[in-house]
Image (cartoon, helix red, strand yellow):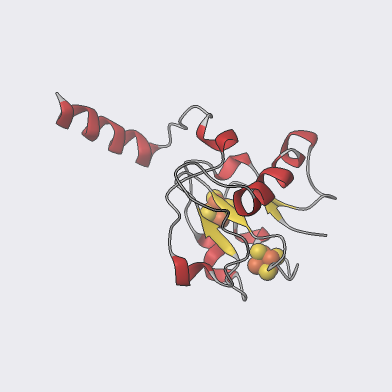
Length: 129
Ligand code: SF4
Ligand code: SF4
């Protein structure tokens, strides 16, 4: 029963789940987080703390959320844009830090307009004028 993170995390990334994970297997992409399916010990500690209910399992997932299970795996086992080789199983997210890139599925999503990100985007637009 592997846990995985679905689309609602995108552009939210409040990192609550990372604090709870006893094996540090939740990795940070640019716009979303991803659970390493091999390193996860299925303890379930991360699931209740997610404010947007993005963390789920096969059993709890809606069909739309379920489509993100293979995408979580893709983050680790396929070569991500701009990287020379797949991440694999690094053995701890803190050690390698933010990856700075997402899977093509997540990168293609329109930006979510949360209050915080709206403020950032406005600032960025103003600065570039
Ligand atoms: S289920 Fe447990 S081990 Fe797996 S990502 Fe969540 S907190 Fe980490
Ligand atoms: S707690 Fe939920 S929204 Fe926050 S980073 Fe984890 S999966 Fe994403």
